[in-house]
Amino acid sequence: MNPPTPKQTLDLRTTKCPLNFVKTKLALEKLAAGDILEIWIDAQSQSTLNIPNSIAQEGHIVIFTDTLSAPEPTGADVPADAPTASEPKGQRLFIQKKS
Image 1 (cartoon, one colour):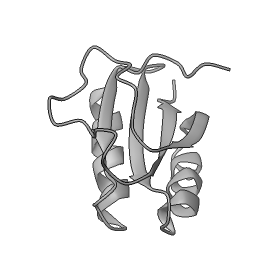
Image 2 (spheres, one colour):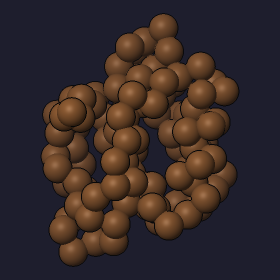
Image 3 (cartoon, helix red, strand yellow):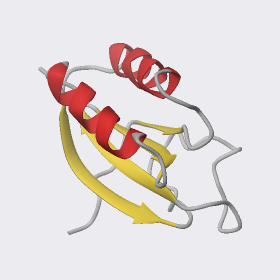
Image 4 (tube, helix red, strand yellow):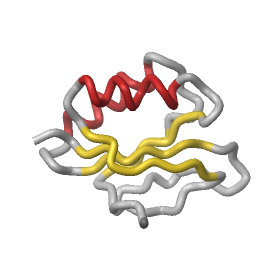
């Protein structure tokens, strides 16, 4: 299965809990219902459990997840400072904003 095309991408691999969830929640608030947010989190942290659980409690849906060493630019809004292949592994989550 190929990942969906996100409306926005956030690299939160160096952002600790709970700030990474706060930033995710704020980004979701700016999106329209049904839009997809791609986030990168540290694959070695508790965030891999905490963020999906918190997202579900907010009513949003994690529709795709995987662990990679570098992102593939997928959205129109991929930031210029997006991670490169030399950066540490991360888990990426594709979150669909609730309707």
